[in-house]
Length: 337
Ligand code: EPU
Image (cartoon, rainbow, N blue to C red; front, side):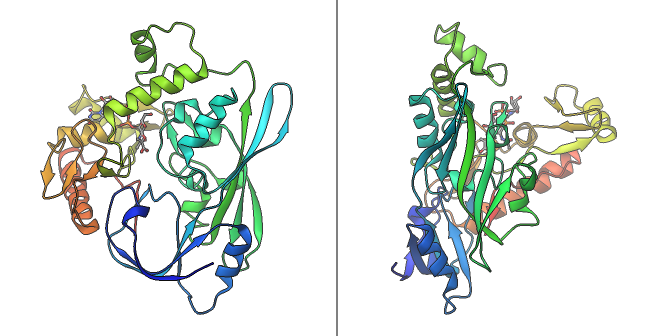
C-alpha cells in the first residue's frame, strides 16, 4: 500500500475534471482498506470508485482512496435463482455482461450505466423501469470510524428514487465493499414496455426477446442519446427528475398540457427534468467548455477543459431559469465535491 502525493484525479472521474488529490492510495483488499482507515496522519479520507457520479470542483485536500476491490462469486443458488457477491471495484457494465454470459436475468435493463458496483446502492441506480433495489439482496460496508464490516439488508438501505441510507443518514460513515444481488436463472421477467425498448426490438426484428436482446436494445438506445464519457466528459443525468404533489401538478399541467409526466401515486407526479430544461432553451447550448448535451438535456458535458466550477455555474443557471419558468426546483443527482 503506497501513499502518493499530488496526484491528478483526471483519470478517475468521468466528467474529466483535472483537480489534484493531496494524497492518493490504491486499495486492493479489505485488509488494506482497514489499515489505511486506521492511519492517524491523514484524518481526512475521500473515497473514489468509478468516479461516475461526482463533480469535482476543487483540489481534494485529503487522502483519496481509490477502491480497486475485485471479484464476482456465486454464493448460493437454487434451480431458479442465484445470489452473486460482487466486490465494490467491479465495473457495473462489465458485471451486467458477466450476468448475461451466465444467462442470469435482472440487470439487463441497466446495461451501460457508468460507474462501479460499490456505488450502485448509494443512489439506487436505475434505467428503463428497473432500479438496483429490484435485484438487491444485501451489501457489506466498512464503518469508517470502527473499521468493522457491517451487513445491510434491503430494508436497512431505505431505497428511494436515486436515494438511499448511504446518501442521507449514513453519508460519509461507510464504505461499501461488496454487493449481493439476486438474479433469475430461468423464466426471466422481461421489462420492455418502458422507454423505447419495444420500438428498438421491433426495429432490429426481434419478437421473442432474450435478456441479451434487451441488453442490446438498451445499449443501442443509450448510445443514441447519451454521450460516452470516454469521448465527452459527463456524469449521466446531472439532475433528478423532480417529484411534485397533486395540487402543483394540476396547476402545472393546466399551463403545460403537452408536458410528459409519470404518475407515481395519487399524490405524487414525476416530471422529466430533461423536458423542463429543453423547454427553457438549454438543450445543446455551450458556454466555454461546459455545455448541455444535444440529445439529452439532463446531461451536462465537459467539452475538454471545463472546470468543476464552470459546470456548477451552468447547473445553477439552469436551475434558476427552470424555476422562473415553471415554478419547479430541479436538484442535482450528481454529488458535488
Ligand atoms: N425529454 C425531453 N428533452 C430532453 C430529454 C428528455 O423533452 O432533452 C423528455 C422525453 O421526450 C421523454 C421524457 O423527457 O418524454 C423522459 O426522457 P427519457 O425517457 O430519455 O428519460 P429521463 O427521464 O430523461 C431517466 C433516467 C436516466 C435513464 C432513463 C431511462 C433520471 C434522472 N434519469 O431519464 O438515467 O437512463 O430515465 O430509464 O431518472 C442516469 O441516471 O445517469 C440516467 C441516464
